[in-house]
Image (cartoon, rainbow over all chains, first blue to last red; front, top):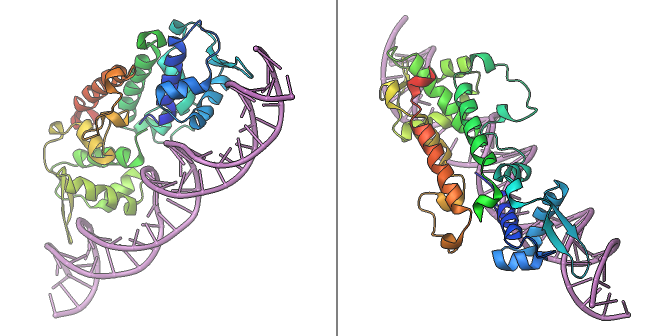
Amino acid sequence: MISTKGRYALRVMIDLAQHDGEGNIPLKDIADRQDISKKYLEIIVKELVKGGLISGVSGKGGGYRLCRKPDEYTAGEILELMEGTLAPVACLEKGAAACPRADQCRTLPMWKEYDTMMHDFFFSKKLSDLL
Amino acid sequence: MISTKGRYALRVMIDLAQHDGEGNIPLKDIADRQDISKKYLEIIVKELVKGGLISGVSGKGGGYRLCRKPDEYTAGEILELMEGTLAPVACLEKGAAACPRADQCRTLPMWKEYDTMMHDFFFSKKLSDLL
DNA sequence: TAAATTACCTATTGACATAGTAGGTTAATA
DNA sequence: TATTAACCTACTATGTCAATAGGTAATTTA
């Protein structure tokens, strides 16, 4: 299940895309529009900044803005950044220790097939598709 | 992320399918073959019994067995029973309170599309496909 | 009938993640 | 210099996960 962090991050990115070209957007405005606690959003945008998806400017007139055009983001990269991984099972996480049962596992092919399908879905869904 | 309960349940069902027609299969045998704690499997098979997917017989010569043929189970129903829901977001859970933002939500269509795709995938994957 | 076997039951636990809240400091502008 | 807004560290309550522990009930076989 996608956590609130992933879902809220997506809504923040959509909000920023909807106000793209209007300069810096204060987090307070986003919090008000999206009806999400500003305090909690701080945690989320911090990760988005750290991940290089958006940039923030302090001080009066400051706020956040996208680093790229809305069609240059995918839902997949936003969700993956916030969730850590989108893998359906631990053994398919990037950097996971090789499972000793892998070659005899009857379920691994299904998980791989599913993982590929899901990955394709979210990484082909652009932020601009959500406006 | 699918929990161990869901993943182990799938492996128990596969194991039972692999020994279908051999009478009652003791949990100890399954635990040994699958290399999973028997104690923990008890919790899992209890839910599988309660959900009507398998039946258990006590006493010597007892054990568990499938209630139907392996091609009459889907991975989806097994996973859904164990996980409670497969919904990617809370607002798509069966019996969830209607979200007041639903009609203006820019992400809901994507979640619905994904939910349908995932549902189709797991519910068209038969237990017999995993042998 | 006693022993062995196996399912079935209730309760508990440690570790971790989730979804926030609280209260401050730094940076930039008017 | 006052205001605005990002940025930072820390804390917390709640819940879930992944088991473990220690029994009782049912059934078969010697």
